[in-house]
Length: 220
Image 1 (cartoon, rainbow, N blue to C red):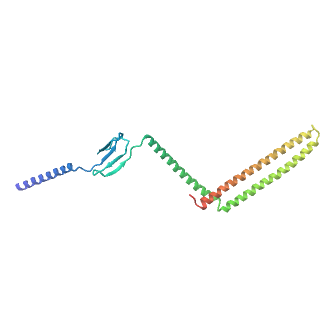
Image 2 (cartoon, one colour):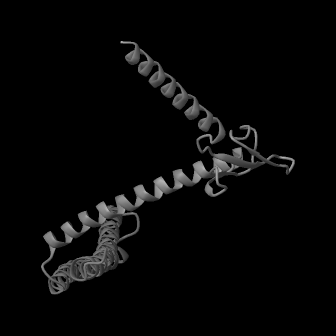
Image 3 (cartoon, rainbow, N blue to C red):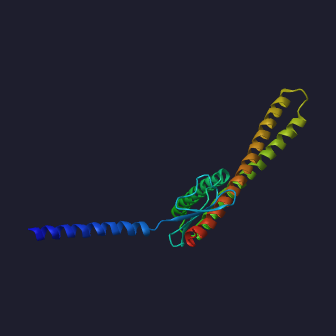
């Protein structure tokens, strides 16, 4: 029993010595820590185990315990830089939204063109039909105007033969005024038809370009 007690005491002393030795080694060789290098606003270089004050406006270099550079922390942005960065982010978001809308519009346009036309030849055939129809309208209007002009000239001749101050003069004047209004309407109608034809050409020219570019060539 005495021998066992002595052995237990010796083992206890060995354990205590090991713990003390571990603590001593920890004090002699501390765990690796980051070393911060920074330059203050006056240009003075500092090294420390803690980051520099937040008021510094310089970049920060972080080293390990063996002096190797681990990372470089950029200097905080100035208010002007933050405002510029925010404006750039907003512009980038607007550009992205515009790009997405353009893609959506392009997809809608491709669908419309495919539903309207099967080929470029079909676009040209539609152009020819519209031209023939409008040309026919304009021709009929021109014929009608010539008829009205002849009638107006006939009434003017009658009015010149009528006695001045007679009731016929007033009737002829009313008829001529009505004919003038009808002639003006025919001319206005033809101007409208010409504008319509120009708009048709413009739209079909655009359809032709878009059909070739988006549908046939598949331009994105």
